[in-house]
Length: 385
Ligand code: PMP
Image 1 (cartoon, rainbow, N blue to C red):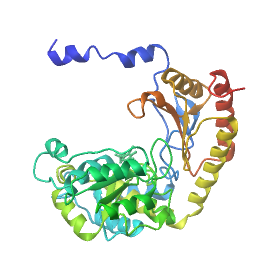
Image 2 (cartoon, rainbow, N blue to C red; image 1 turned 90 degrees about the horizontal axis):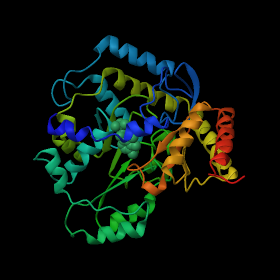
Image 3 (cartoon, protein in one colour; image 1 turned 45 degrees about the vertical axis):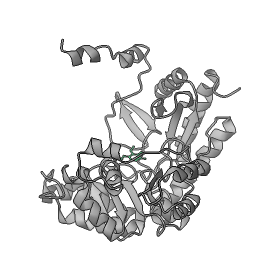
Image 4 (tube, helix red, strand yellow; image 1 turned 180 degrees about the horizontal axis):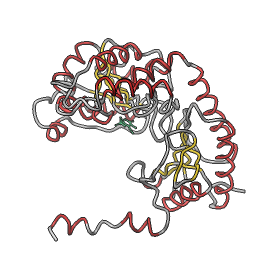
């Protein structure tokens, strides 16, 4: 065996968990992503999806994707920079800019690539290879939504240097919202630029789902808005929106845009259709909030620790890895799919079940899940009797 293979052969943690019957990852789904999915031939209630608006199987969006595939084919065979820019990419960028209230937007092939490509570019190291470049910008972390911690970090930065504050709009695991009004004040005081990752806020918060800045009426004060197509927007890809000069610079320097093939025609067309549906069917967002409040109130009533969530992402803190994996498995056996969140996604003492809602969930479906959670929560001593 070569050195690499010898080393990798020691990595047997997944097999151990598999043997215990509680391995929770790469679970196979045999249907579309809806509130009910098929797994192993069985119907299961889905409470582990990021399809907040329930649009991934909307007939109009599917039709748009099919038509785009017929017209443009299945792939673009090149990057946006060279041969991979279609008229529908430009149309989508114009619509996204308008949607979030910025001058300009740029579409990438995934949201991950947006973050990877934008942050090093705007912090000023656009000329050397990705990995080295990333290490050039000094990264200072601040505590979760803690403004004293943010200010103490900003104080440590040298005056005159580019400072970029990057925050999640809606925190992806805890479901709380960034304290944007206070962040804006600090950014002004310390001359910092703000980038909001709205992966979990687009389609959820703000005017017609325009995101966190819109929610707080601070669109002009947030410099860069990032979003993904893989959640509310029902496809695959991501975007960055900002003023014309910033996007102009990013589109000519961001390596994850320039050296990776563009989003497929089907994805681009699907998102254009999704934006139309979000505008034309505001009742989706209303219903999402209705079931969200219903679920939050009821999990609290049952005695679950759900932290500070105020959004469709509900963390059920278990704070025990084995129990977290065990209840995930037991819930699936009872017909409810949820995601376990363990280290390194969260601190190892803060393991949780991530329960997320879609605009297409009914209160009756939430009731079924609540009943299973109550029964198993008592059985595993997560809540008291
Ligand atoms: N930002 C956040 C906060 C996310 O949760 C995710 C996806 N989990 C991404 C970015 C990446 O988006 P994508 O799935 O489009 O790569």
